[in-house]
Amino acid sequence: MEKIKELINENRADIEERWYELILETYPPEAAAFFRKNKDQFENPVGAKISTGVIGILEELVGKVDEQKIAEYIDEIIRIRAVQEFTPSQAVKVFPLLKRAIREVLEKELEDKGLLQEFLQLEDQIDEITLKGFEIYQQCRERLYHLKVEEWKSRMYMLLRRAKMVYDEREGSLPPQQI
Image (tube, rainbow, N blue to C red; front, side, top):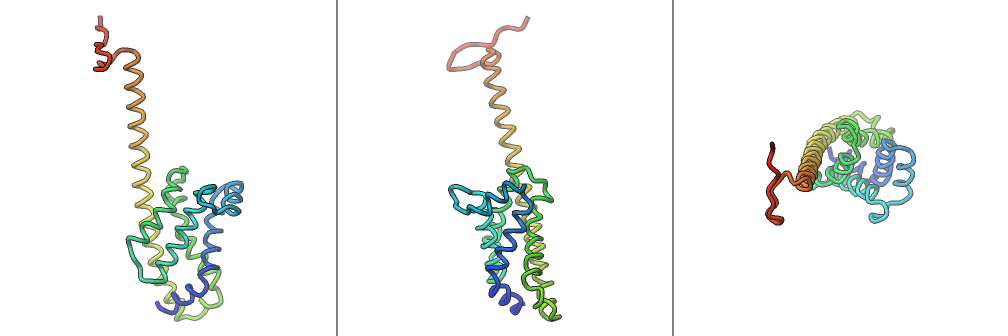
């Protein structure tokens, strides 16, 4: 798989740019325009996180694959999409888009059967990234639901306390007796 990795590395800037553009197409046009024109991490943290993830994942794919680093880069992209209420399929769709970006940028080179075989092997790695993305998405969504439940419990407690239906040690008051 060395030839395909070398070729991807030589064309990495174009592949990164194309993949980033394909990801932006999954957003509404106004949001995509904003992400496209501003990659500053403070003014546009979403665009910056996506860009960091794109660059990192591609760098790991063409180098020595470090599963921990790839997971961190996947997390960069997926955590944002989990909070943005993307469905699971919409959230992880960004990873198969990498295959498309590579195919579009290396279209002529992939006519070589040997190189195509290497690319198919690389596609298997991208599929693994997609599956890991789904796993991370699920973890993020579970955490969000947990936070929502905790927030709901806290609000409910505050309402019950205001209604004097719970004992509050600070106030030293007991709830009113039920008749």
